[in-house]
Amino acid sequence: MTENTITLVSFVLTLMVFSYLLGDAPLIGNLYRVAVYIFVGMTAAFTLIVSYEGLILPYLQDIQDQSSAWTTLGWRADIYIFFTALLFALLLLLKPFKPLAWLTNSAFAVVIVVGAAVGVVGALNGTVFPLLHAAVALPEDLSADFGALVDTLLIFVGTMTALYTFHYQARAGADGAEEESRIGRGFRHIGKVFLVTTLGAIYASTLLTSLTILTERIGFLFQFGA
Amino acid sequence: MGRGQRFGTALSAFVAFVIGIITALSLLLGDNPALFGNQPGSDQLAGLLAVPADVLLRLVVIVLALSIVIGIANLLYVHVGRLSRGKLTSAVVLVSFGFTIYWYVARQGDASLLEAVQVPIESALAALLALSLLHGGSRVLSKRADIWGLLFVAVAVVVLLASLPLAELAPVQAWRDWLMRVPVGAGARALLLGIALGTVVTGLRALLGQDRSVRG
View 1 (cartoon, rainbow over the protein chains, first blue to last red):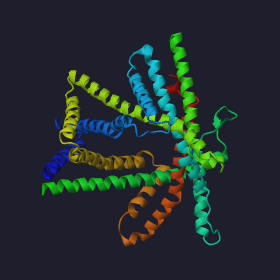
View 2 (cartoon, rainbow over the protein chains, first blue to last red):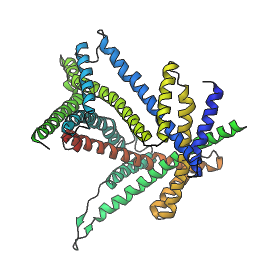
View 3 (cartoon, one colour):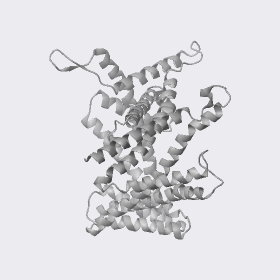
View 4 (cartoon, chains in turn red, brown):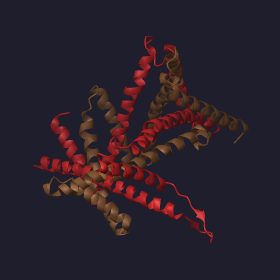
């Protein structure tokens, strides 16, 4: 595709997406929908291409190559793994048949528990332990930089109180209504300050990113028009 | 549910539980000889313990790749059904899908279609996000004019002002840097820890067979 064609197609599609701003006007209202449907079809096609070329085809080539093996169990084990995966995928197709749905659920269950195991180990090793370690890490020389010590304490207090905000605990009061302790409410308020500050900063950063893209798109439209 | 189906469901939940525990243990203990000290044979033992996770992960990756293909086939099937009911917009999805596959195969891996169609649509959609965000921000002030709404908007304004390349705003930029390093750092850590702890709890529920998706 030539550079000019790419630019022309980009221009038309950008206008089609921006037609969303004009609302549900007759004819124009459909342009946004058509652009999104083109996007869906193309994304599905590229996803299929990537999963075939990046995963399925290399695996098919690997099981025909006796000199290489995925695991220490050898090449023959690769064939068993591949055909077991193929069987699992076929079981997924049985979902519409109610009496055999448990077979589909069994295949799903294996996928889910392996994913869950990876998720648990990954979350513990990759997030929980390193972040807890970073939250309580003190500066090396406490006397040299008092500001750094205060910042570290603030980070620690902020992390813990913000985590506390996710947890809710109350007891029944004398009149039966739920009642939260004053300390708990205090922790929750401090944590909320840190969380709202974080969400405000994330909001501003996302806004900046999308504004940059908007400026680039508008610049492109004007450049093409000129 | 018949007795045979109940037995099948219980059996699959048990098998899933065993497989989950084996995978988790294999991931934790495998390929880590330091866990077994500097004794002879610790390398082989660690390698051996990593095999179940290797096999199961490979199996799941292939199943997921094939389920993507099944998912896309289902998408096309749904749109063919919609088209037969007279929904013409579904024809756009089908034509766009077919044309992309044809283009990629006929042009032997030419990805210029990605540059001409997908990138501009994604960029334009991301640009529209700016307007939605601005609309949402204005609603925070009009609908939730309490201390939390004001704090949210104040922080957003500080971060936005500090992004301007003006020398007069140097104090605001210093303040933004401190905000990002300390309170935002703490809040982001708490959010990430919350997500990670949620993942651990949900994962453990699935591993222990308490999740509906595993029980069938």
